[in-house]
Image (cartoon, rainbow, N blue to C red; front, side, top):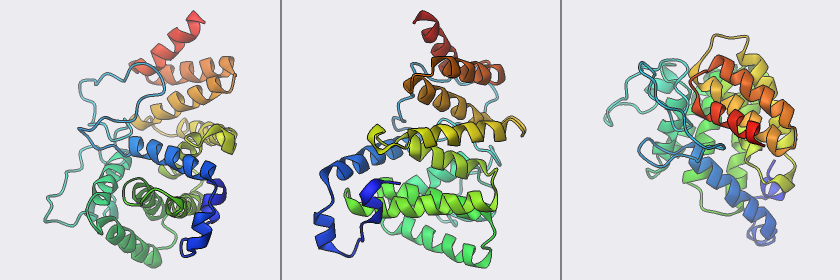
Length: 267
């Protein structure tokens, strides 16, 4: 939750004026983090929580805005502007990172992200039990929050819709990777005084256990990197080391995990 901002009614100007400055600062921090998450290829991406970045490996699928490769179809083609921009989403041929990149681009075009959200809501009305559609809707709302909503309380209202859609996706599919990652990521980027870091740790720990029951996927490495960083920041160095080592056992070429462990060894 984003404290008071999430409960602010967007239609009441008087209420907007009374939003505490601390909540506005919190929103700005969250939006800055989201902009890093949804950075397009070619733009400077979110700074990694640890020194270094993963070196591209021969044969790797192209990485997405969060440094993760698509889950469903790494080689899904990009559609020309004349074609339906949601074809890959609704046709289930786009993966996690491709979906994020698509919604980030739509958010920069007038009314495009709103149209995408409206179409996803129509699809959800036809198929309300689809966790994939709810997760896609959440990702679209998150992109709208970061790129298509003016700074202020309205961002909290839009982000609340993203969280609601993530929660519904998780309710329908408790092991839905994209939904669990999106929710935990949002909690991890909240200012410390909001008190969501413990919930973020719990979310990433649950996701780590879930993904280790599934076939290895490139984006799974992000969970080990972020969870270890949160644990170290919380003062649990041993658990952070174990988490990074656990990730390195699965992703031996990831430079961030190697650097993190080396830095711990120097402390």
